[in-house]
Amino acid sequence: MLDLLGRVWELLYIEGYSPDIGKRRENFIKLLLKYEFGLEVISAPDTESYWDFKVRIKGRWYTYSLKTTERPVIVKVAWDGFPSYERARSFEFSYPILYITANRKTKRIDLYVFTQSIIDKVRSSLGRDFWWIPRKGTNPRGFGISTRAIRILMEKADKIGNHVGKNYEPIENIELAVEEYWRGWYRLLKSLAGYNDRLNP
Image 1 (cartoon, rainbow, N blue to C red):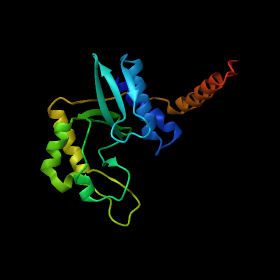
Image 2: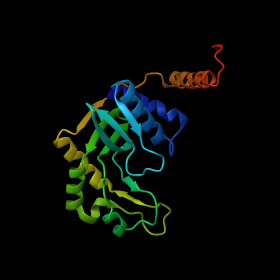
Image 3: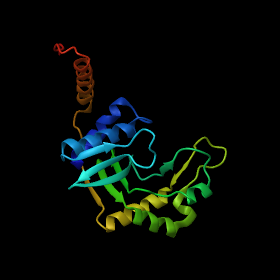
Image 4: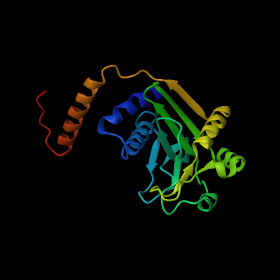
């Protein structure tokens, strides 16, 4: 499944980059869990800021905050209000973080789970350095986990077996894939709109 996710990760860029790329990844990951693994998945309400989805495994619900990126970088955990260390220090992590990196240059995809206990240990050991706080006078609001802390979280997750990764096979003819992507997108929307007659190739 990591190979599938890696290849789809590349295709999702056909429609462009941020800010929508993260949401497109999230939607595909939830559908992958549903259709490839037969799991029940519940998406967080639009007003929810602490978790992204719940998945039911063997009768038990697991709740995750999902973060996806191309390389280890800061992870934003709060978006509202003026950023400060005082605000960050009082922030409580309520759910594990499902952290996925997929590098299109190296064709490598890695999935980590940062449990609350791992997060608390790294947070305690790094203190202020755990946090990323935008400098005063800049536009970004909120705050996040620093790149240094993310790398340590990745190492600790790997040590306890909360990491899987692999090099995936790239898509050979991306130009053809782009053409077929938009053709399929058009057919899907036309079909859903109630026009089911076949398109000329």
